[in-house]
Length: 152
Image (cartoon, rainbow, N blue to C red):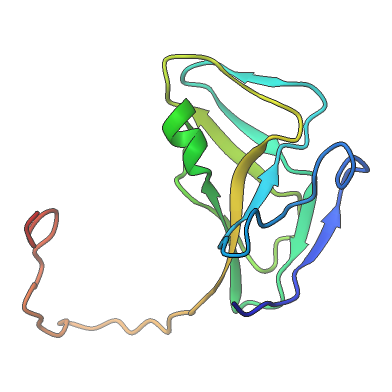
């Protein structure tokens, strides 16, 4: 696994102490866990949406990278707490605090604890497209078939 320098600024003196700094849980983890940087437990009622602070800001090396915030699968599957926007995008020029949008899609309230791992951050390369407007697109075997057109 190749590494790149990711500059991380702690916006709270609790990070690295009461609240763990972002970390990779295992050597093979693609995403680093993002803990909730909150002072008190936060309860999400069914249907609630909230932006949870992480207490960090990052500086990606350049516009060739993006930070993607994904749900933690265990929270989604076991507790029904997930990201309402599916994936959060952190652009290379953003320097503000990373906030994690969470929603409770279950029928039960869920309480987020101080320092609880609420999402994961994956750093990925970006390919910026050079857009060409055309009258026709090249043909393929699939064509414009979608939504199940390739079978089950």
